Image 1 (tube, rainbow, N blue to C red):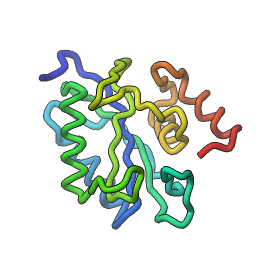
Image 2 (image 1 turned 60 degrees about the vertical axis):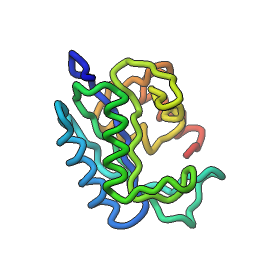
Image 3 (image 1 turned 120 degrees about the horizontal axis):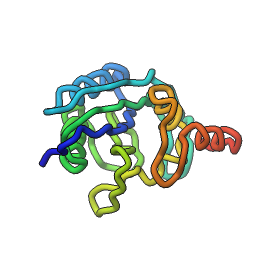
Image 4 (image 1 turned 45 degrees about the vertical axis):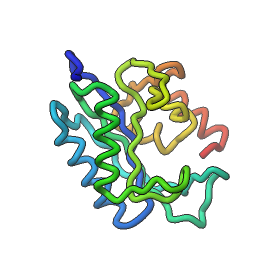
Length: 165
């Protein structure tokens, strides 16, 4: 299934194992090579402390995080499947929730679409709580807005004032 009009997908990328930058660059190239899709913008890479189920853990390998804007005719579920395949091609193993990983790709937003299924939640349910998503997103889309939560700049400012991750 394809989307008739191209949609803009916001994809968060992260890596804290192996050659992080090379892995992220491969992931961007793979996203850009998806059928009927092309990268519109990619943020710089932001170094961040690992976030685990128990909170921030400076003892874990640090992450590189960024955001890509992808124009696509793929529907959100097909895009999610493609993202999971890209993760697997880059050695991603789903062993532990929020564990170390070679590559993490999260679909943060898909135009103004809202999805709440067992397989996919858009917008991403925790994006508004994560400066490592909001800061790079704002870098590539200064007027970004997260459906149901508001302007990304306002969300990021509130996180930074509150000292959140």
